[in-house]
Image 1 (cartoon, rainbow, N blue to C red):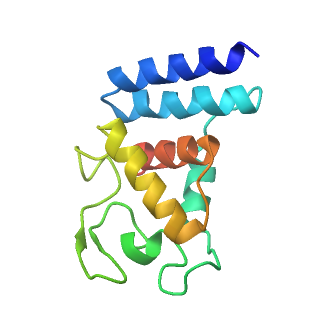
Image 2: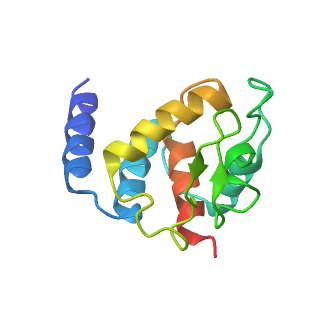
Length: 134
């Protein structure tokens, strides 16, 4: 029973100090590990998640609907037409550098595209993929 508050405090502490994609990924890895023993993030699963088709929204059935087939390229929001900077860290150094922004966009995009909140494991995999894609 004490483990949950301890994990929450640890995650809050990590979030305050996260400034790199690797540090932000570790927040989600810690959370995923508390739910699934032995969890290890995977760029391959992150890539599959990026390309997965969800039946929730016809205009945005995949992440690639707005972010193109390559996270190294700029995209455009499928509904508003607003320009979107590349997702990949290699193409956008500012990407995945602010934990509050990362969580905000996961919250919004997971709801719109996936139709639910993304799991900590999905977030860790996604960040791993975006950090490694070249």
